[in-house]
Image (cartoon, rainbow, N blue to C red; front, side, top):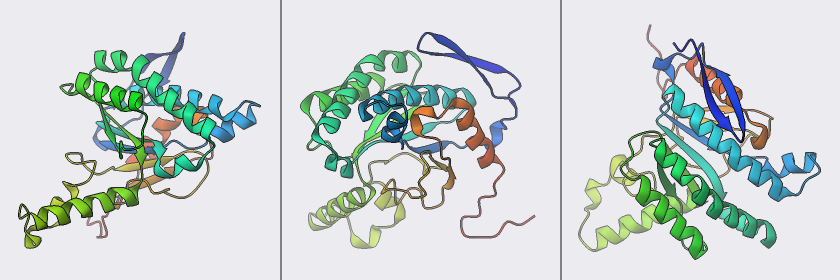
Length: 259
């Protein structure tokens, strides 16, 4: 158990977070997060939606640091979905600019803290500057051995599965894969998350009770924790609350717990 406080920076302020009561043996290794409510949070502040996206980016940084401190191995964060292109052009453009700035301003700190950055989603249609920043972030941190930040950009769970099926069919047709060899493990090798374990816990702030086309295959047996709090207002303490709740659950994977 952690019986102490740890400190990290939020802007120019030191923040103390109590991690006592966290059982290290029950910390989820992979946590998926649907970062929802940026726009609604901004509206409640009397600000434009873009203000919420900017605040949400800072929240993600703090949550990654918190997760790293308690031994979480992977954070998969839903940054921009395939459906988000339907939003107003001005908002989409701002998000793309924010992604570019985020990958520029934070990559050095992530690298210094041994964070490995990777992405899932289609890069087709993304601005060239964003694609280059993604490539750079992966290249710089590829050898890092700390927590993995897996950012979902231009990602949709249905599109991911379709993409995997298309590639499997192609490999069967060219003879590099036999139909009889296709099993769940082979299928997972064609997903964006190849090499990563499935999420243990899915966190959804923002009050909505749906998975929004996020990691449809991977979260089959993930525990789910939700809160009405919008993502920009989601604190490290709330994150730890979700982790503690996870530690109190019994994962049965469709079976029974024998005692």
